[in-house]
Image (cartoon, rainbow over all chains, first blue to last red; front, side, top):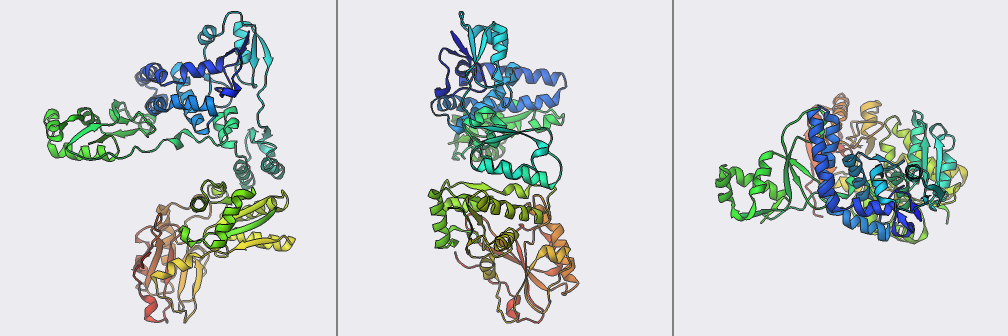
Length: 338
Length: 259
């Protein structure tokens, strides 16, 4: 029985290998709302606490950003996995790419070659390679096939994906080969450049790099997502697909429209080593998480769609005008509505 | 068909596009032409032909070690090469008029003339048409059009007897990202100091700028020359300096007109 490698990225439907495709299995089991909410998020929370206890604030900043991103990622991932499988949709890749980063962090997995896509651990591989498997199919160079083959004693056979060409170029060649490379990019003979070694300093190299990256339509996607970027060259960055939540409607009785959490700070503050309780507004939708005062999270928790603001103020033992102004702000940022 | 077309889109709103510019963009949708332009130009193009791919040349403004003049020359070389060596249909889309304050267009025109490459030029309304509605320019003593940078940094003085417009008043750097308005006060200070050597400190000058999207209203504020640097301005602001011997009318601020 044939087994297909876990990489180089989640396969689209037409690229799924017959038999046991580890990449497709990983997509189905881990790129899901349920996995992010019930597995990845608790792991990240625990990891954040451990890192802060150990005084590793720079690493904690990365984990905190990942933790808050589990909210929009979880909201989008099921649809993204479906769109990627069925259509190879570019916007779906941005979501799956961020989820891949969250999975790497939460599970302690390493990325496979270029891009964020994880190589699952040995236990996962052993649990998912069926008995009787004899051969692992390799789709690209760094797709994990060799590691799975060694672990499971499988022969590796090449079943290379037909992909747009990527030209490997040394950084020092960029200036001298600028015209030739640009022409080949324009004529679509190559889709992106894989630049090895440092790019020389100076205007000539900077201008060459600028032109080549501009003309290589898959360059940004290839740099971000590796091979997957060649399949979806217009895939935007994760940061480009999130937007501010729409404002709510002010009224006497408000209900919350997002989750609230008090976390140990913002990523920027943690990176500076500053830890202090910070409120977060977290939407189960494609909206940017917002850091707020912890009191705003307390108020948000009391906005149940039943009590009016006067009752909420009494319950929280806070002056009504303070509740009123904070509620107006929550409505403005789309965290609450009448 | 391979060739090079330079298209001016006018200074701001879609209504400023000429019919010829619209026609070029609509044809490009189906011709396979390669369009090149900056972010604000791309937005304007998309109001005419949504989704039309305009390759971004914004990177030229983010190269820290590349002087602006070098970047413009490089862009011109790139576009000429693409059209006449790589045999592509190239459309360079610019804001305003291609013939106003656009070094890349100058280099393209000269390179193509020398090599006898034909180019097509699609004119556009210039920024001058837009900003002159907040002043009363009579034309009786001509008009000087000077770069604020040249006045502040290169010792290029206006003739104080005649009215002058100093353009790109907020441009504070010759390379890298110069769009941040917060960096403009250094340039304003340099312009003020230079002009104060020529004009009285109380000479009334008018800062002309745009409200930006979506209306692009013509905004203006009149200040004595000595107070020019008290607040930052957007990079594409202009300064109206009336002549010392000119008619009083040219010293007045005109009210904002309706859209």
